[in-house]
Length: 153
Ligand SMILES: [Zn+2]
Image (tube, rainbow, N blue to C red; front, side, top):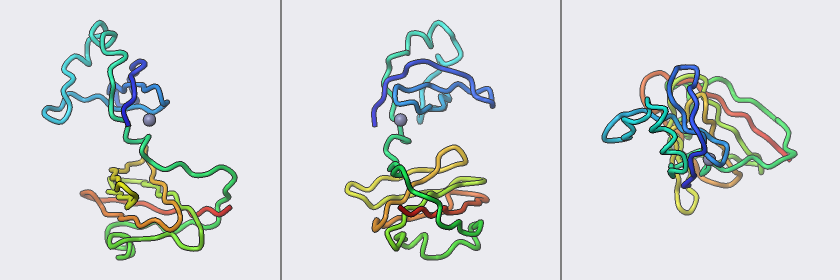
């Protein structure tokens, strides 16, 4: 979803993050051709980019409904121990919602909604799985550790 930049701040890794109107943040790294922001180091130029529009991936994530309570937590999985079903097409059953939490590494997360939407999850962006929707969960690269929290009404 397109969101306007309202300001910038440095994160704990000393990298610039654009603050978006929705409350989410996007890391701004000059990394052509993926991201062109050679201006990010200049205070004057940053000011000129307030109001620019950025794609906010976090806004495309479903939101867990209020008033759910935690019913169950899965074991901690890695690329070798995760159930094969996760990468083939996984549905949370029993009307439960699930939160997909990455402890380490990167996870590809695809929601087969209409239209389908894909994310790369890390320890700062968790995935949300609505009941009865097909999801695919695949390690992106390298080591990954993640678990699921199941919620019920
Ligand atoms: Zn957002």
